[in-house]
Each structure stands twice: as structure tokens, then as C-alpha cells.
Length: 580
Image 1 (cartoon, rainbow, N blue to C red):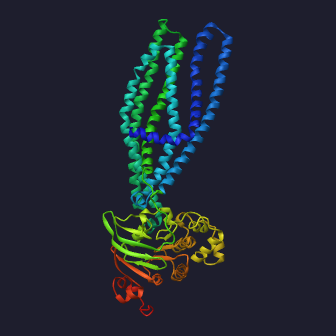
Image 2 (image 1 turned 135 degrees about the vertical axis):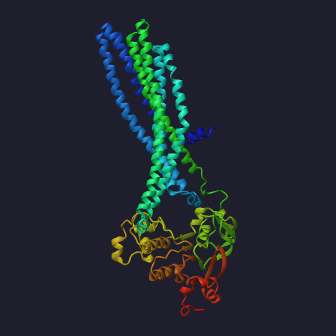
Image 3 (image 1 turned 120 degrees about the vertical axis):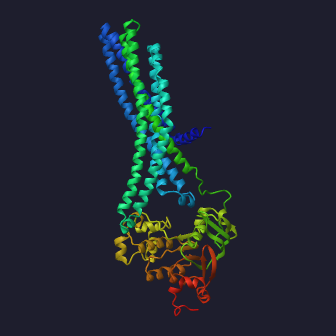
């Protein structure tokens, strides 16, 4: 099957639940058009019979029919408009939900390779384009096509020869449309790609407006976006010009129809081969062909744009997601050990993790240390199944981690990472994300343990206030405390803390770690930190450099060894307070 046909077939599947309503909408539109088609015939009867034969009673009947026709058209128009809005919004909701639920299940490497703006553009702009096509454009296209067929039938009945004469113009019209189609589609693709790029650029800049201010980069950023907008304007102007030329040629060819009708029809009236009423009616029908043909051309252009949107949406939907596979295994609880066997990982052809061998045992506390860019956070991503080893394997209780169901794995593991996901809601609701069915008492307890509130007055003042997009109303330390509160609420067997206290004061950090490491719910804790004070709770410290395991042992052993660990933390070491 043709790929284009396949795409439209898949898209129409979204209409299947509403097919009855679509059919009713189409019927209402067709009845409205049928009523409109009657008007020229009424005019023919009035000219040929009422005016010439002076039939007053027939005039009353015709006027009554015209009045009833107008009322029916108005009522059907109201009903069809309501039905159109209802269907289009239902389709938008269905498509948006499907796309969102698919996107959040895509593997992490997808988001590392894609622009956020491009993804949002597809979810919002492209879905809205498709929504319009699935209902408005598609229905109106069919409606106009059937209207044209109806007009053709009526015109054939009125005068076949005259109709065949004007038909000679339509091959030129279709040739013109086909000639411009590929160029219009290419321009539409370029416009959408540029729009997605601009949205990504704007999203990135607005999110990081703090840095624009800090570096006085106003003019630089203004020039960057100015150039992007100039390129978009050029593409839109080029596309508009192409559309104008295409439509102009089509309009010219359509405008020849009434000229041919008047010329040939007038000659037939003079020759006595046609009545004046028939000519007037035929001319009215010929003029009525103009609007549906013009609509078809405009709708066809919209369908070209929509086909681009459809392709961009299905490109996302066709990307494989992390699904529950029948071959995936449920994890036996509790976790006894996690083994990294000869694990290697490459990012953009660069070796990030190199033949790493290590075993984490339950009930112990670990610290992973190393220079920035050494691969510590990559190990976390590997343990979370966000990355897949290029070589070697990670075993959980002897089972390959890649064979364990992702959702089941996340029930056993909590990660508090450098980046914190905060949304524009209250502090307590942000904490609740760690355990969605948590009671209010649990939320308050987790908040208090995290130190996000200084005292009861502070709690009553701020607990139910919204924190702004990304927690913009909070300081860096408050954001980290809120994120830790979410972690405390979750209470899973294994906990990974990746630079989660870098902006918290030492006293608060000490209090939080004392609770975390003293909490029996967290059987195993893996901490990543550049602060020596955070490492003292670890039973074993793992030292990583350039993705390799350099050394491991207790803090006392590593200090005494004076190896890589000692060099990393020498400036923070106070040997008078460290027991060796």
C-alpha cells in the first residue's frame, strides 16, 4: 500500500469512535447544500412560468418554499456547527492523550537526541492541524466534492451540450493544481521545521532567562531570534507567493466558466434552443461551482500541510517505547545485590564507562566519587535503565536488568538527582509526587524532615502557596530540600542520591543525611557527592576516573592509601578529625 495512503488510513482510525456523528454531520451539510441547489431552479420557474404565464398562486407557493428552505438551512447550519465543534474537540483530546502517553514512555536516549521545542511543537501545533483536518477539512472536502457532483448532474439535466463545453476548462485546472503540489508541500515542511526550531530556541531561552540577565546577553539573544524570525518570514512569504500563484491560475480558469456559459447560452437563447429561465438557472449553477471548487483548492492545500503534520506525529508514535513485554520478569523482593559485570557505555562514540566491575550488596551504604565528567551520573542512568550498556551486563539478583520490567524496577528504586522536577503547584503537592496516594500527615512529616520549612509559622505561610514554573520562587537550597522531601516520602529499598545537597547548608545537610542513613526503610544507599562530609556515612567508597574503577574501600583505607581519592579530597581533609 502507498505510504501516504497508509498514513491517512491510520489517521482515520482516530475517527472510528465518532463515525456515526461524522456521518450525521456530513448528512446535515449535504441537506443544507441540497436546499441551496434548489434556489436557481425556483428562479427558473419564476421566470418561465410565473412571470411569463402570470401564475400568481404559483408565485406564492414558490416564495413559501424559498422561505422554508432558508429556515431549514439556518437550523441545519447551527446543528452542523455544534456537531463539528464537538467532534473536533473529542478527536483533539484522543490524539493528544495518545501522543502524551506515548512520549512519556519513550526511552531516555530519545530525549537526549531531540529538541524539546520540536517535541512540544508536534504535540501542540501538529496535533491541532490534524484535528482540524480530521473534522473540518476532511468533512468540508467531501461536502464540497459531493456539492460539485450535484451541480454537475443538475447542469447536465438542464443542458448537456453547454455543460460539456465548460468541462473543457477543468483539465487545465487539475493540471495547474498538480503542477504546484510538490512545491507547496516542500515549503510547508520547511516552515514546520523552522517553527519547531524557533519554539525550541524560545523554550530554552525563557527557561534560562536568569543566565541571559547574568551575562547581559540581551542584544545577543535578540539578534539570534531576529535571524530565526527572518528566516521563518522568508519561508512564509515564499510559501504565500506559491499559493497565490496557484490560486490565481485556478481562479482565472474558474472565472472563464460564466463567460463561456453566457456566450454559448446566449447564442442558444437567440436561436430559440433555450429558454431565458434555463439560461439564468444554468448561469446560477455555473456560478455556484466557483465556491466549492475554490474551497476544494484551499482545502487541498490544507490537506498537504496536514500530511506533513501527520508524518511528524506518526514519526513520534512509531518510535518504540518501553513497554511491558511478556518476556520481562517481575523482580523478586528484596534486592540482594546489583552486579556490574564488564560494563562499558559509549556516548557519541566517546567511551564514558570502561569495563566496570563492581557489586552493590543490600544493607550497605556506598559512595561513588570522581572528577566531574568521570562517569558517575552515567552509572546512575545505567542503574535506572535510562541507558543500555554497549558491552557487559547489569545483574539484579542474578537477572539481567534489561530483562526486568521498567515499571516494576522503579518500585524498588528511588533516585534523587542533580536535576529536580518541580511543577507549578504547592510545596506539599510537589512532595506528594513521591507517593501519589500519600496522606496529608505523611506529606507534612516528609516536608519537616527535609527542612523545607524553618518553623511552624513558615509552614503555615508557604505550604499551600504555588512555587512557580520549575520552582522559580524557591532558592536553590529550597528546591533541593523539596526534592529530598519527595525522596523521604517514597521509602523504597534502594536509594541513589546524585549531588542532591550541593546547595544546602552544612547543618541542614547533616540533619537530612542522619535521617536518610538512619531510616531502616532505605536498606541500601548509593550517594554521589563532591563533599567529603557527605561521604562519612558510606561503608564503602568507589572511586571512578574516566569511566574506570580506580580504587574502593572505606574512607580511612583510601585516605591511608593516599591514592586517587586522597588527591580528589585533599583540600577538604582534616586529618585530625578523620579516624584512620
